[in-house]
Image (cartoon, rainbow, N blue to C red; front, side, top):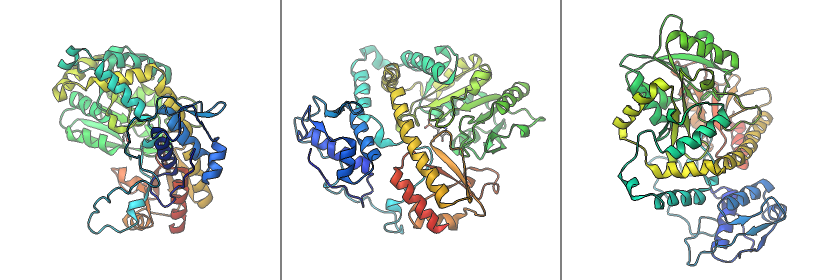
Length: 472
Ligand SMILES: Cc1ncc(COP(=O)(O)O)c(C=O)c1O
């Protein structure tokens, strides 16, 4: 293997640079099939990076089929990965610079361009096994019978509904028939369609505060009257559930409250489902990133406690990637027909090929493998963020919601993250997201920010916290 230099000033993460260089060497035939790669220890020493960085790059190359046997006795270049014609070189050190995107007028040079954005809920897109996925999707398209070009049903492809039935039983203890599963174009589309079925103008909708802004807006757009219910570090404060009104729907994120990160205790879950039955209120459980648990065992879904009154909403936006636009609902039996008629009215049905590819991806155990790998990587990133915050702000920063998900919430004693402070942090090269931005009733969370870590490398996380420490 030919050694190469990494560009530490580049905005391209180091893992991605190593991946780019090695995949180019393999595609171009410089690294030949059967050739052994240096161990991660040796490569880390040569390149001057941590072993984890090399390991992540090797794992990505293996996931895409470039490499074999990375965990056993050596790592080798796989057969058949040399390209017969010159390829456009993936970006990396030495690659010709991409043309600069035009900048918005007035934007400061150098700060935003390489800002470290602790945005929420973004999976590590550079670690998605995209080639393998594209191949599956292509096979689904090429293998379709000609009748499949004519249309599909609003509930989605039976293959995916069956694969999800087994997946949800195994992972979330959800016991349902495939007929209760409706495939959606992401969680938000499912929520909007459900809202069109159960809400009328003026219907009260109970909503976690702070909460998921787009979902709240989707309900409000259907004319709902939003009733904010405060959350604390354990999630929805069930002791504040209204006793004198009967909301049509309540939206909750019990596995990892968005954005404060609490996991709803079983006592609160029981209180919530009992209250909802009593009030005649449909519970909507948004289980957007429950697959990523680090310090806790599986917490069962709310749906499991009351399948007749909980609509469960899942998405592939976090476990895979957002642009896939694939999600699903598990509906109480009584809502299935009505929901499907609304979906038909909205946009008839979702495109079958990604659904068929996902059915295979799940059925062949590849989604489980991807989740296990990402959980390991995200845990490392979470540990880096928590460790850096604790070291930089001893006794001053309280970290909430660290056990699961792709972000934490951090409460800073004696601080208020108003626009001037957020702006000066941004000028220093870090973008922070105040929890107040997600709150309907303002004023209770001014010292708290939500920090997503899943898309950032350890080195970026540590650099971001060091910048914060310099300012705060
Ligand atoms: C709380 C929450 N639920 C669900 C989702 C996923 O939405 P979708 O599947 O429409 O991408 C998101 C995405 O950001 C989210 O923040």
